[in-house]
Length: 96
Image (cartoon, rainbow, N blue to C red; front, side):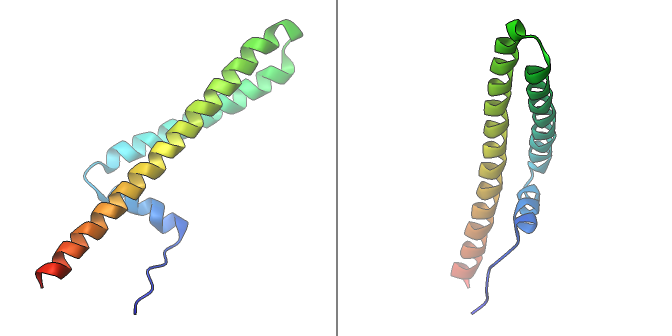
């Protein structure tokens, strides 16, 4: 029996195999942008005066939530692409 173990990088690359691979690439770009915003808000929180910390703290939390949501979407799309690939393989095997 063949082992179907793949590495994480191979799994994430497989998400680009569908016709909407460009949309997944946009998601990765947004994840990097939101990571930069997250780091910037965290930096500003610790470097501003006490009366501005509430604003930057809320910005940090919001950017953290957006970052988590973006990464969740990326993994959901990747998993969807892999499941669809497995269904196509199953269809081919059933037809034989």
